[in-house]
Length: 211
Image (cartoon, rainbow, N blue to C red; front, side, top):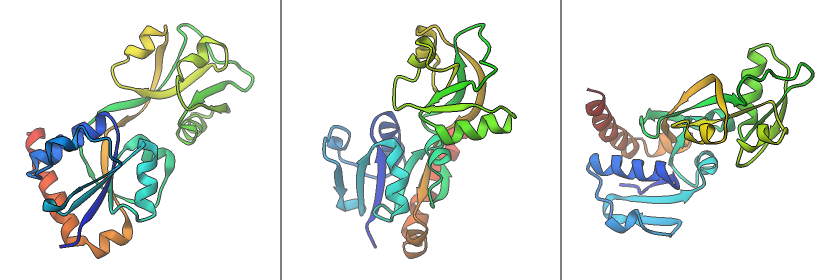
């Protein structure tokens, strides 16, 4: 059997995905969760893992250095990479929302939207028939309305706690987000048997959780 290479995002998604793989019967070593290595091999399971920034996972898969990846739907919507989405893993649920200071309306002249999701945000407001100026930020998006940089933000919301602590409110929900298993199109043809086995085992676990 060919070894499968899986790109995994660091952080909470990694922990939940590793737990899901274990539930599906994959023997991942205990140090798997603690390791600071960027490449971890599990030869007894014919698996190799890359640890990457969440936004980069789909890039590794598109270029074929990873056969598979686990990526949030937010990344897939924003990056629009040439990958196939195989399975909704139903982990790390959250959603993309429009937020801002309470009881404020957007500027009538070129309202500004701060976000690390410029493509998702511009598409959303265009579909609403609104012309906006998108300001790309890489972090601390909540700061933008507080200092007058933007009228609204578009960001991931999990519990809403960060918004609340910064005095912001949600105005609209854009789309629900969960983590997905994605595959490189060439790998899907060349390693179809190995990949399908992984998908079947994960599907069984996910189906049990839904029931």
